[in-house]
Length: 278
Image (cartoon, rainbow, N blue to C red):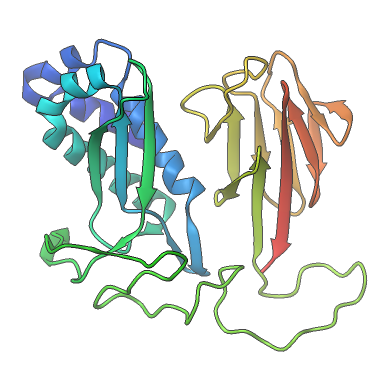
């Protein structure tokens, strides 16, 4: 059973079904949960081969009517969303710098049914206690552009967040033209949409208009589950039976091999695929 499905089932049983009644409106809890998952994926930072750090402090901005309707349940809803994020991180082998928190805030610029998610990485001043209980002491935010503080007892981190997620700079190595990846090297992959970078940290990445897509594209010409990027050697893209199809490097196709710099067009949106050895 998926993380989102388990989250929905837990929510349905809260307060004798009160949550099910509260959410009979525009903003659905599973939509928020899916947005938090994408927030983790899109902001994952690779410290080294065995450690990928994701945000642990989330702010869900709601319209005034939605916030007024949900604020009486903000504590329980925040706990359930935090639990969902923790389950998802365990599934994806993500790690956190501190306790997971999800807050609901009012945003006057949002209309009813719309929401916005912001996230950040806050470092805890204490390590987790027994049985996963986490410190309630105030967390210290990382300096802008700097590295978050390391929690006590955490595995050692590299001296600086390396661009490719690998610690320890080595002397430059000359490679023959056309040679394959260096032994032990790690390939970083990401896509760029309208200037926004989305890291690819899983074997597959689904793009579409649905809130359940890994990367949501707000474009009427894009299907709910439009296409899927599959990482590998080489990486590929597969159309998922979309209405308007995909165009890769100027060619209409249902499946294509991706290279660094490949341009993918779905609907009226252009996506640039990028990869680099780290």
